[in-house]
Length: 371
Ligand code: ATP
Image (cartoon, rainbow, N blue to C red):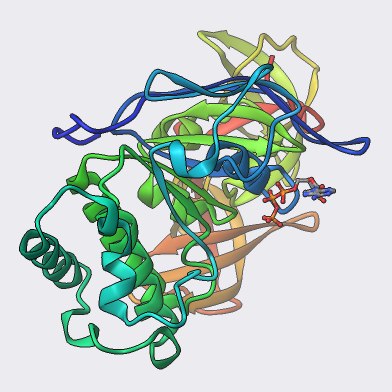
């Protein structure tokens, strides 16, 4: 969260629902966003992210529930405030710049109605172009820019509006990996500097973890978890959230014993003599059939002579710049993916695989909704 939150809007969605015919695109979604929060809504295709953002923007009318922005009800049973009166700006996936206006005029567009003197408007426009790194492109038209440059113009235009809420609709999805990373950092820092509340939708979990103060995970129109990135990673409340936010492996296991404090001991299906401790969000009786989910951060590799760990064979290794990501076969047809090591373990090599119990959790694999 940012220190300068004087302008930042508080946003509340209460029991929000949206029906398209008999298709329920949003189902009873309630979220309170504190001023200055960078909230990322994460979910697979069709989970309702765009619908929720469009309801907030005023492009779509909710079927049920209310939306409050900065203390004003903007959508409710008897209220519908149009987009231009909601005090928000939006950055779209496809940039949505005015094609007939130069970069400078696109950025200056929201300033046209401001009370600033002409010279101040011009200064603010220069400042914004500078901040998003495109001062040299002010005279060009959108069709003379790359995708990344166009999205920088869109970001500058959103910041120029000087509003308390900025909505981002998958703004990086049309950019290549290199530009995506650079612009992600600009979005994170400039939005926070502006002191606005941000609501950003994406289906990319790494983008969500990198940007968010809070993450809301959507599945089939429902909000299935709302928490900090750290808690979502360390304590997913459903199998869906665990899978969608990335696991190294998922295995069917039986609970051997309960340790108390939400911890259980399970036997690994590929090394039955090897037990590991895992956390559970619900009370589980011994003999319960559940799934063990392992985050990549909780798996490490060592030489085969190590006393600790279970036996594995490297199936694949990929250089990722900082080190190596490995895929390891652990027997009985099971494998673990994305296991990081600073040094390379070659394909076919025998290794020992160690599990850190803090990154292991057991859950009912079919449960999609938290209890
Ligand atoms: P994506 O990441 O693919 O954009 P999303 O999470 O943004 O997906 P939405 O676009 O909000 O999902 O769609 C949610 C559900 O509502 C989907 O099943 C979609 O087919 C449906 N839907 C969205 N808009 C309409 C519409 N105008 N008419 C009918 N159904 C719609």
